[in-house]
Structure formats: structure tokens, C-alpha cells
Amino acid sequence: MDTQDELAYIYVENSCSSAKIALQGAHIFDFTLKGKGSVLFLSQTSVFKEGKAIRGGVPICWPWFGANEIDSSLPNHGFARISLWKHQSTQMLNDRETKVTLTLHSSPKTHVLWPYLFHLTLDIYVGEVLRLELTSQNLDTKPFTFTSALHTYLAVDNIYETHVEGLEETYYFDKTQNTCTRQEGHIDFSKEVDRIYQNVKNDILVKDNKVHHTVQTEGTYTIVVWNPGEILASSMPDLNDHTQMLCVESANVLDDSVTLAKGESHTLRHTIITEFRDVSISL
Image 1 (cartoon, one colour):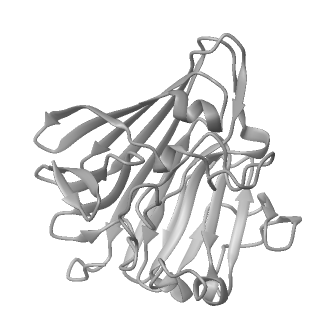
Image 2 (image 1 turned 120 degrees about the vertical axis):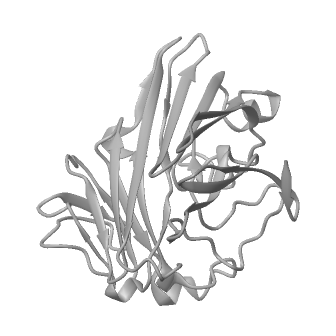
């Protein structure tokens, strides 16, 4: 077990790639393809402190996405990303793929924030691609409803030369305007973008001159696309460069929020396939 500032993390490596996964939040904050570059963005000014979310990688938003609708004083994006998870196992599936499993169980501390019994399992597959599987299980005697997201920060070379394909003709809720709009053409990023796309059936492609990311999802038809833009980013001390990141998130929100009866479970899967157009570039 290694540490970065206050946070312990797991380091895994195989013939294809390597990864760093913090126990706080079960948070993968580095995934690097060998000889190519980093797939995930990590802010150089991110803090690694107990109780503080890491700015980059793949934060887990659970059991609510964004601000809590009942009590805005509760942690933004829920408590899973700032809770200490348990490392259950690391398995070498073969010389090209490693599986890491972490779990989070309800406790008196979580019960104060959210009054239900639950069990979360995150399986992270580190190989030629990165795959995350978040399984939520209801251990309570009554049903509960949750929202969640795998809040993936993808590394891009320049957000102003980046576009997203696969969401054409899809309706989205624009959080910056509080309106619902249909996507015309691909998505460009000349200013802040904060959108929730619903009824998404396609793979999502993120393209710039040097790297192409393909995002695949199961367990939801909702995708969140976010870049804070220059103005908002300037007010975020833990985000050093918004031009090198783009969040494309598999999310159970709005129509895809999840209700589980006693004993039921739900799995959200998120896969990132990355092609570096110039292997001499390391993002």
C-alpha cells in the first residue's frame, strides 16, 4: 500500500497498463496505457486529504448526484467518494488484465447522512481498456431510491479542439440554462457545458487531434457531459487547467434514477477505450 499525502492507494500494473486507486472513495485517479499516456485527467492542484474529494480520475457519486435535494448542507455528490472503502482483493486475470475489488457497507456514520442499509461493490478492470462496475445492493427492510454517477475525467489535449460524437438528435437537460434541448450535430466546448443526456443508446466518442476516447455504458441510458469553462474554472482552486479535461459520465439520474426493493441490486458499468493518435504524446 502506498500513500499520497493523507490518502492510501493501491498500485497495480500489468503488461498493458497501470493504475492508482485511493481507498478513500474507491477512487481510481490514474490509469496509464504503457508506452502511450494517461487516459484520465488529474488536476495538479488536487488535494489528497481525508474527507476531500480528489479532482480528477473517476469519483463515485452516490447515493445522490449533485446537491442533496432535501439538505444542501450534505456532501455534494453524496458520501461514497469521501468514505473509506475496504480493499477486498486484487486478481491478475492474465498478464494483460488486473481486477481490483473494493466495498463500502452502511454504518452508523452513513446512516446519519442517508438512513438506509446498503452494500456497494466496485470492480475495476485494468487492462487494454478501463472498465468499472458499481453494484448497489439494498440490505434494508424497505425500498430506497438513489442517484449515482461514475464521474469520469477524461484527459484531452485541448478542450477547444475537442468534440463529442454519438449524442446527435438526443435531448438533454442544460444545467447552465435550466432548459431541455435537442442536440444538433456534435458537441463543441467554447464555454461551460453541463448537460444531462437521456435515452442514449450509442457509444460516446471523444475526439481531439491526439487522442480518441470511446465510452460505453450499461445499467443506464443517461450520460452527463461537463466542462466548467474558463469562468467557472477560475473559481475552482483545485482545478489547474480545464482545457485538458472533459467529464463524460455514466449516470443514474433523472429518469434513470434507481429504486431497489429489499435484497435487490443494480450494476452500473462504464468502459473507456482509448486510442492515442500520436504515441509520442503523453497527456
